[in-house]
Image 1 (cartoon, rainbow, N blue to C red):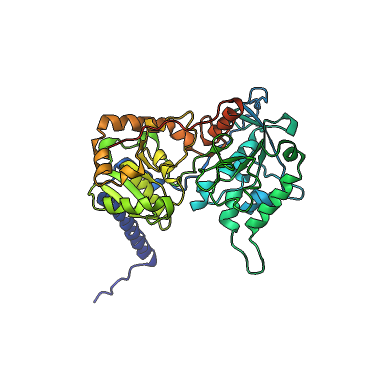
Image 2 (cartoon, rainbow, N blue to C red):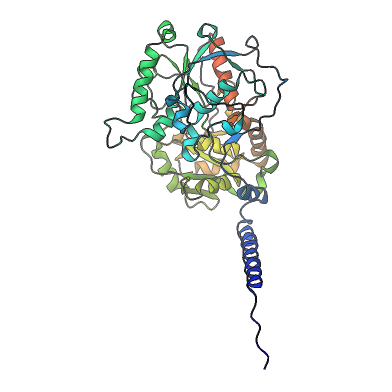
Length: 450
C-alpha cells in the first residue's frame, strides 16, 4: 500500500497566503457592492484612499526665487520671539540651546499638529508657520504678509501663543498643582505683553492674538480686549471685547477630507437630500438641534443622527456629506462649528440655521451664492425646511455647487500657504481693516422665507 504524502510547509504557507488574499479581495468588492447603491463611485474612491486632512505641500528648492518684497506686501508684521513654551513647545518640539523657532525650510523638520478635534482650531499654528517662512527664498507663497525685524516697521504685531492648543491639551489641573498649565501660560502671557514697550505704546491695539477655540484665553481675554483677535465667532464675548471693527473671523480647519473638483458628485449622484451628523442635545441656542431632529428623523431622504469623530466617524461624515445635496449647519453651544466648513470642502450646499453666526471674509464673499440661509424660527415650522430644499431644482443647486468648487480653496489651511487659501485670506482681512476707515458691517443676508 502506497504511503500518503503530506504537504510541505512551503505549500501550506502558499495556500494560506492565497486564501487570505482572496478573502481580502472578496471583502473589498462585497463592501463596494453593498454601499454603491447609496454612494457614488467617486465618493467611494475617496473613502478608501484618503486620510487625515492635514495639508503639507512639497517644498521645492527654488533658490533663485526672490523673497517677498516688504514694499509690495499688503502687510508688514512683527512677531515676538516668545519662548517655545508658548508655541511649538506645546507640540512637544525640543529646541536646542537658545533656539526659539524650528527650521521650517524643510517639511521633515516642521513640528506636526495633532489630528482629531484638536485640528479644527489650529489657526494659530498655520499663521505662525506662514510668518516664519516669509523670508525663506525657496518657499513659494503669497506676498500678502512679510515678517519684519523691527516693531517700528510693522503694521501689526503678532503674538505667537498657541492658545487653542494650550486649552485642548493642558486645561486639566494635575494632582500636584493648584492651577492648570493652560492658566499658568495665560498669566505669563499677560505679564509678557504688559511689560513690552510695543504694547504700552499702542495699548495693544496693533497686536494680533489668535483665540479660535471659544474657551481659549478665558482667564485673561478681558485684560487683552484691546488687541485684535482671530476668532471662530463672537458668541461668548462682550461686544467691547470682540467685534467686527477690529477682529477677524477665521474658518475652522475642516475635519473631513476635501473632495477634488473632478471627484465631486453632481445633483443626480447625491441620493441624500439633507445631512446632519453630530451632537443633537445642546444647550442655549443649540436647543434647536433637538427640535429639528424630531421633525426630520423620519424623512426617508434625510440623514439626521448623532455622531462623533471617534471610531471612523470622520470618515463616515466625509462619505455622507459627499453623497448629500444639502448639509445642515445648525447652531450648537456656539453659533459656529466646523460642520459648515466640512460641508464646503465636500461641495455639499450648506444650509445655515444659526441667526447669530459670523462668517469668515463675509465682507468680500457672498455666502448666498453657495449656501441657503434659514431663520431658526422658520426652520422649526413643520414641513418648512424639507419642502424648501425639495423646491430647489437641479439648475439652482448646480449653480451653488459650481460656486462651492470655486470658493473651497478659501477654507483650506496648508503649508506652505498658497494664494487665496485660508491663511492668505486671513491676512488680507487684516489688510482691509487697516486700510478701511469705514466701520465693518455684516453683509445683508438673503434668508429663505415661508
